[in-house]
Length: 61
Image (cartoon, rainbow, N blue to C red):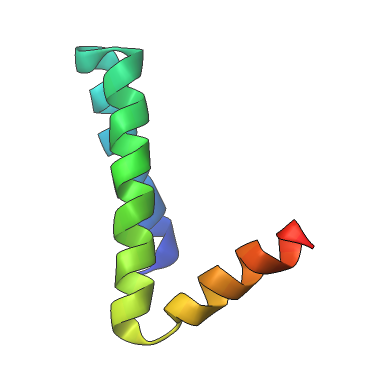
């Protein structure tokens, strides 16, 4: 599936959530989509948990 089709599907889902559920539903769908994206990247092996932890610790210094 191309990135354009994935973007289209995500945009439509956010649009429907915003239209039918209001702004709170829009934010919930966007937040859960971000969590799902990170989980998918972790499962594919493109991202490691250590990368996320190291990046937050680097900002604290």
